[in-house]
Length: 240
Image (cartoon, rainbow, N blue to C red):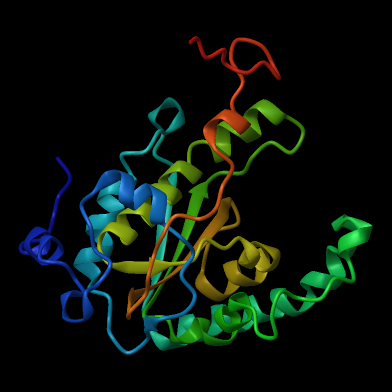
């Protein structure tokens, strides 16, 4: 059984954000279907209790791990100085993103206008240092750049834990954003935070309690549109 600090279960079951309705829930399908990247309607002034974060990580590390290695590591930033360092590096990566990856964007999309005047991801970059907690999900070791199977095995042993962590945070009334942008500055982040060279950085989860947020399922293609049966491109035959 995972070790849970005294009082954490009662804190979470009561609903961490009950004063304004909150978003905490124990309904499995509601959690899975409504876990979104939350970039606004967040309470920057309310600390996130370390015990709640650790309880969520306890749940996250029940995820699959190749050869039972448990190589995942979670670096939680709550102090102003390291958060500000990471925020500066995140903004540096954000500012150079369009130029560095322009050649990877389909030509017809390169000069499209942004969907609105102030996309939420811009607000995230500007306010990252204000987040009560930043959780950087890492893995000890490095994936083999020349072996696709080993790359799948490597990331398949850490990303499920990162997603489980985001689900646990959602269930606890916390908003988080799934972002990989910080990896563009991996070397400088490692230097700033003392991360060893043989540790791979993956997902950054900025975390805060929600504040009047409404979380609902996104529009997605249904299972029958994206699922094949027994052979590629073959749909399930519905009798009757």
